[in-house]
Length: 74
Length: 227
Image (cartoon, rainbow over all chains, first blue to last red):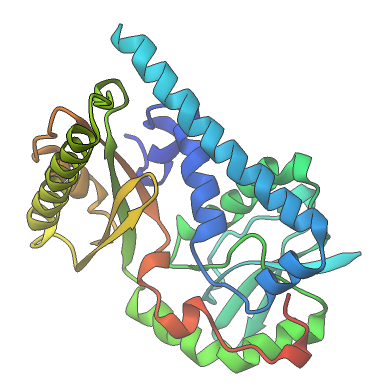
């Protein structure tokens, strides 16, 4: 019997969906320590750049999902 | 340059099996403040952009390793402390709030349902501006109706339901008793999906959406060096 805590990995529609959900949760959910955004935006370019890369990847994953779904339905 | 990366907080319990390695194979350490335990690693900072996705998955694995066993309060990946003293000061300042939320949310998990336009059926009507706006209005009403139907179906099953509109669709969060995740899936599956919409379920997740505001954005003293 599958463990409910494994369903994201084992029963998800696509690996990309799981990755998308994980990225969304670790970056957008949970405790925010004040100051992180200010420092990230103001001083540390690499962090800001890193965040952009992740966001771009999320968009790419979404686009890929849509393309894949269209392909399957043809 | 190294920083203190915090993964999650939870009620201290000796029987819990804790992860040994975290982001970028950094050793995971436990800091205990009375009954509150916090998992953390010393990591190289900032993360390189080329490693962000891998770091995110590693971070997730640490949090979920604990979450499979008990309730956790997850931190966000890009929040770090400059040094140990800052971390300790933060924990001392916020310990009571964290413990209160952990007690309130100890037997529940977060399940999610995302509603979004079905990709293949979202052909945009470009015949006129009016037609385009009408199409958007119909789609919005339909999406709202479906989201409401899902909420109604979950009302007797979940302790609380919240809805958030996002760029990519409507996200429904349900606070479910641990162990009733399949009830959530079965119930959501009973609601017919309109032809032009899709929905995606996921979970269980830590109850991040249902944390108190003081825990989501806790007090920090700027002098503590929280980054």
